[in-house]
Length: 423
Length: 86
Image (cartoon, rainbow over all chains, first blue to last red; front, side, top):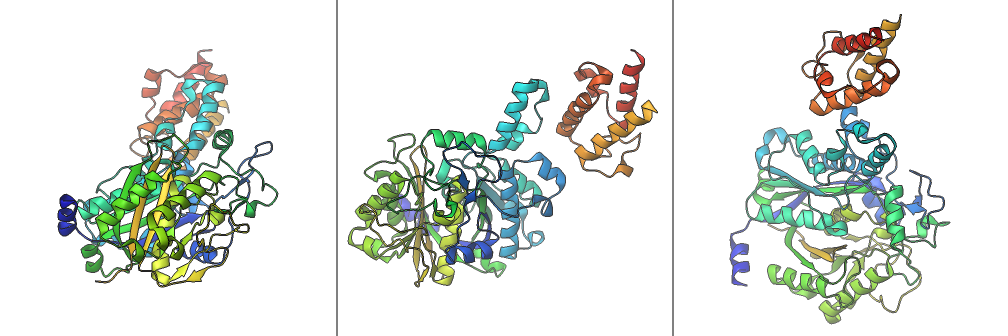
């Protein structure tokens, strides 16, 4: 405990100053945010491949995305969609942050953008060539396109950013871990600003086959795709996969103030833990997530009753939503009933490695605007999921503290705490 | 006629793969120095040439042959030589 306090006395404050989103409900933070508030769904029947015969035939695909409008055709041809979503999200974050990269020290700007899977379609396509034509016809760009750290590398090349740079990989918790590791580096003064987040383009036949084989995906709502993802609802039956990316610009407070940046909110804590229980099933006691909460509140010194909003992982799988609810109730006790808890996955689907970053962006916008996005497709209450999930309609509340939480296969959990900024 | 046809096909592959204008693809243009290619691009280019001209060269382009293909003319000459040796 003494060590924790010592670090917090000497560490730098970290703020969110830019948001870039590429999601199934919009390109750019405004479009995505307005559609979330309006309760719109971005889930449709799968259009990028013929899903006939798959148990799940719905997905959250990014609409009207033309990477050639953003980067050279050479960059488009060399890279997997997951990396292209990330580059575009970063360009949007740069514009949103109104940051002039020519006026800052680029050796002090890092990039930590992860992916849950990496270049899934590249793996599939090249694997087909490998089996049909042989090893000599494998593209020299296959390896750089599929590795899950390449998004960070390409973003750095695109913008000339020479600070700390790597990928973070924790399946569906990737975005939160990436932001958390960026937060830690900034606190320690190892960089002035970091573009952090996640990206995913896993809506491919091979990943559908894999996730369907696990019985993890929704299969009962193929005829009404927009209702398929229904977090915390009693009739939920699995997650719906989504594509996209979220990249946020995190800056030390002094760097943000020096360039008179718009500040969405402050990040005051990050914690990570592992269930050490099962490769894919969450710990039925909620233990891993509860451990994250304990560390998060010890580190920040915030009282749990001060938190008003939790952006839940809320995947719409029977297990996740049940045990996530249990963990919230166990840790927050009586205060759990006063919490607003919403999941955006009803609208976006599950963006796997990108989801934590998109949800961090939602927390930042929630604190900025005082508007809470709803959990859509909520119709039948589940006795085991009995919190206030902000069902179907947005609400308003002045939020001082918000938490984003995500859990990945491997039992890997991460939480982050956001605070309304005041100097 | 045949050689013009080969030149046109070579140039088209280069334009497509390297994202350059047709005017830049002069016979003397070097892939690395003039056309913005990196070492990975040149590997992919040779694969594309091998695929496009499989009927003309009837076989693989060896690594040592590939290493000698530095300019547009090198490639055209290589394919013509293969044709002549039939």
